[in-house]
Image (tube, rainbow, N blue to C red; front, side, top):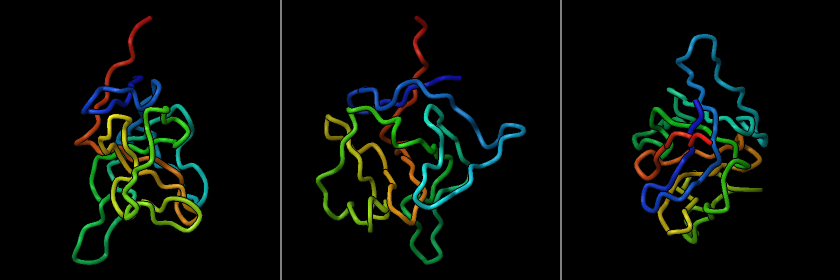
Length: 139
């Protein structure tokens, strides 16, 4: 099944058509998490029922929700931009994604969290409350 991720505010296309793969599908295994490398191949959106991050304290992690989609950062279109909120841009060599959504749509709506740091797998996690999936249009 191919779907396109869109901004919930303005309906801009945030990705091209991606193949959705669920961790609950028979035979599907979660991708190997390697720091500094893309977690997911281009063209795929992996629907995970385990969060990419867990908190071990009293406050839950901002990325501790399910289901969540894991996308390759290279699948984002030019409608997606980095936030101007400097509190969300922490990281060593890239974006750590610990401060909250760090990617916005061209309309200004926050759309998700990009992780591109040397100690994290590289991926984009869309905010399910601010994005929508639509069916790929038949040509």
